[in-house]
Length: 165
Image (cartoon, rainbow, N blue to C red; front, side, top):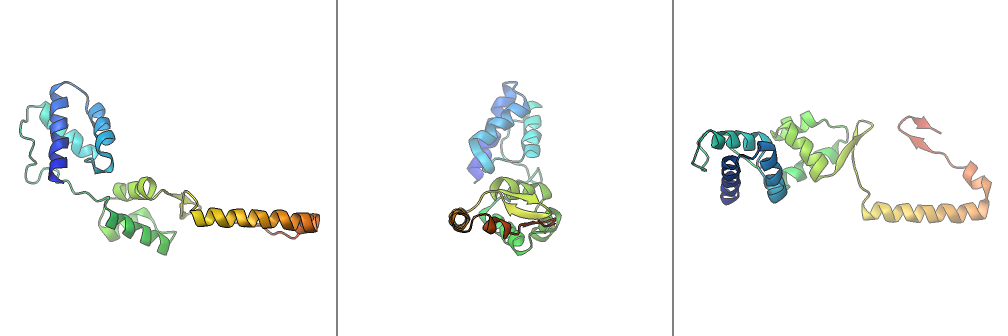
């Protein structure tokens, strides 16, 4: 882990000396290191220091201590909280897990692929089991429609979060 941090700071230092912009360098870091890359704020802080003449790539005590919070354990904890209460708010999760709101947002949207729908967190993609059940139900509907005709369709009741239709 430390070598990854040193590599990232080394990259920032070399590109700062080459007169690249912070945004360009950060974009390259995210492409190279993915979710293991340091935060944008930290990258910009180091970039500015290297631009101003800093030579040492080692982190100083108290200087933006980097702690990776998008870990499998934290992702699982967030998933469990959301599955337990689909109406949970990001702020509540952040307070309970002692993780920033921004990191919780990234875990929910980027890592777990959840989105907020009608005040509930829902997975963006159907699981294989859900897709299989959906196909089975569609085949059953077609069979029953062929057998019963319009009477089948007249018997259906649909609902959404706003009421019965």
